Image (cartoon, rainbow, N blue to C red):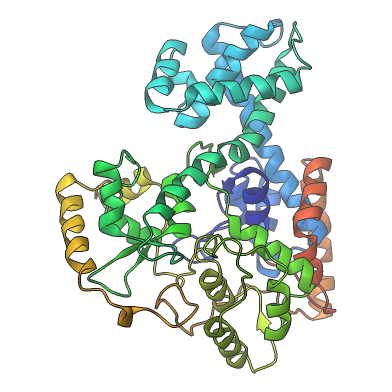
Length: 474
């Protein structure tokens, strides 16, 4: 739930809030707040609260604690930049232009993942101008944020006010840079192997890198496989899955010690609307079909047509319901996520089985595997040749079932759902929860609590319909 909140609000993929190695068991809530919790709070987060889950209030407080830790890191980086520029934190009052220099240096270090304490201003700005093609547009965005926070051209700006500008810029950067993600998506859609499949032949993907000026389409096949971005149902013709690639760590841009700024998952908004419409953590396939009718059509649908679910998609949803006893489909399970991917092949990622993928940033992948994340020109040319030969062999007989974008469909379920706990166990944990609230309330901020209520209440309140429901991270 918190992962969805931070991704939808800021494009932040917070450490400890996503699955590691395709599973949740290797991540701990304390990873999200780094070293900024004391031993008492850490024991609570790693012990009973992690095992039994949070209720809505506890979840909100924990989210606020994460945000408070992030604010603390922002202030620390700005402090380093003051030192780099020879400014006094206590005494210096900066002009609007001096503040702009600090904010530019902050954002440059943010995007590059660089430590300003280890660089001069000249080195930092030279690096960002060389490595970030849209730096000029980013500076325009920063001046807009600065004017809004400082009320046009406020002079005599204190350190706290400068840090507030940096905080706001970091909070808004993910939404602002999502336009770049949409550009990448549009480029991939133009290369789809079949209209609306949400897939691009690996050879065509590399052709875009070598001959289309799309330098970012250069990951090795093995790295794409680890990202979960390859459809290899036909091993002789691997395809890049568009939403899995867009939402992969390879497209993350800025980063901090707490999170990376990545593309915002457009499927999250669709799921949120379904939650509001259904009002429960599960529904019959008839209720889901009715709710889907109120959603915007997938971008793969023909413009102007009256889009509706195909017979094949309806049959698959009935199969999922049958798998779960015939009455209901759990909304927070792998099978429903798989069904959503086939209904919205360009928006919703395909959910691989836990443990079969290991999404990592390119530098982490190279460090941990001692393999290159970027394909050589020779490797790209080989896949391009195979794609040309394979295209001439394709026929309509190779098409998947009506309504499915691929043959990637397995009836293997994985649920991330609340679990019932006996009342006695819940009461026994109440003292621990009270202690956690005391720890977390220090970091509580009204804006985040309001955002959490707005974004997540439909899902969480639906899940609390039972008397003994507790909330686990989704």
